[in-house]
Length: 379
Image (cartoon, rainbow, N blue to C red; front, side, top):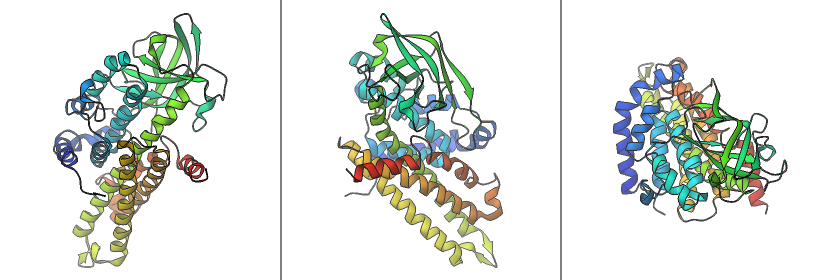
């Protein structure tokens, strides 16, 4: 096993660090305070190839694998977790769903525009009354000749307002039937499709989270991804990969919080010496560093399995569960190390602290990950 960053990963990390110093770090507090979604930034990330990391070069993407993808998310997240979240959702959910289940015509139509962020992607599974219980969704699609008519609403959708194209899962069969849901590609501007209320969030405030509303929205059958009735099964496979994204997001938060804590502990003096000299602080850092390394190993193991085309359900659930809990723990300890300053917006650790919590919720809560893990190991 080789734990060193490959040449592509090193290149991506350096590119993001240089880009972020000019385009992200100076503005992240303003974006966070105002809950501003910096759409122009993602157009620039598209020019850098970061909005189509996994998309094959034949479709206009970067053609990289999951090692490079995890590195890109983690490095962006260190700069601003909101940016990492939006980049990950665009890549793994919307783009990933079309890449995995779209036919050739759909891939040719959408992947090049998604890879450059000419189109920003959204993905709609969650509904107001069906968080973890996705199979009980109420958004319906009724067949009508060569079309399906969609009615219902999705919520907690990344890019629910600003997304140019959305993959939407709707019920085409009976409630609770895992083979009774279908995936559709819906373009912004389609009559009957609109964005709804934007959420006012604790953290990840620069990443847009909003409703998507469908009112007699007519979708041609050519917009169906895969077969009718396969939408839920497809979604579970997409979430297997998506959980690697959230593990990478969690890893970036934890790495960022640890790096800031080490730097601060060396600079901050109390009782005429750096606080890093106190065992109470140095032992915190030791625990944090060990947790971060373990999270990194779990995340890259899942990425390796994904690269090799093997089943990742168990590995991605473990990585997502552990890394997300580590991000919360490490961010919490970072605030403690900073003391009163950690409770202010003068330093980035308070933002890591607020942003980290989403990682234990999005794309399957920690409790759902335990359910997935336990089912897999008890088979």
